[in-house]
Image (cartoon, rainbow, N blue to C red; front, side, top):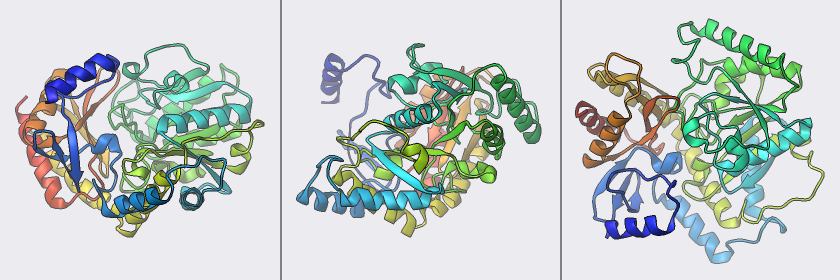
Length: 427
């Protein structure tokens, strides 16, 4: 049955639509932190639909909210008042840390970043954007144009002028040998030098932890130091929280808070986990920025009632059950467990991450050369052992990405680590 579905997939869908595994997997249902495939095999899910199943599969509170809302009305567009959308916007605005915040809902992180770029360029009357090397911001024309990861950037054409800045990757590149303070100073000097050679850009967009790039991050405080330079010139700071938001990093509710010394970002984008699988994205910005557009606009599907009901129920569950605290506690245990394993596996260059956002970088033993074939081997062996993980990395790196639902238990973390250990030792 799966082979037949794969043949049909190949016949009607694009060749560039990536699939995991030599024998692709059809997931048919899930519960908690587990999913099942079409053959009835059960897997512990350590990737959550690319960090999207944030709380749990088939979470009763969310499925109940969706069913009840669907029984009333599913959709009406933003041309009409929408109570669930207003209620979720109020919660997000309050949690954002941005003063006088306004919220606009989209259907994805790509669309959220698109909107942020529209707002920033319109507000600043500039089409120049600063972005981080190794970054990923989505699949649309403008989002691809600011993505600093060649593997996910299929064209150099863009409506924007993009200038790339150092700092998103701590352990590679020209400043890797420096200590954290000197690393930040060098990146700030690079930013100041870059700004001396160009007209003032509209904004800097940055992921606090680079997702597709392999869960890399700078030392705490880098973006605070950047913000001081940007603020002097009126340049906006956009924090792409599509993967880092809602407490996944454990230490903070938003990734930007590790860099909050100079205040919150001007714009925050979010998506993925807030909907727990439902299609929600959004932008938070100060009113003066959000309201800068001088033409009408709507969203047909952004903020639709059924997705907003899911988001409200999911966010309430996350906060009431302190899943941020759970990500910090269980994620910390999982990282230490994997580092102990890594010390005995020559292919593992680094285990890094925060909370339940963990990267395991693989290289050829004794070198810094990427080992994509090793990553593929581990991905397949982990699946055979009953564990699903992701892959990532950029610029000649190969990384396993681990991001389970944030309700992961200690026992499940131990189970997943044991399966991953066997898979790593099989390289």
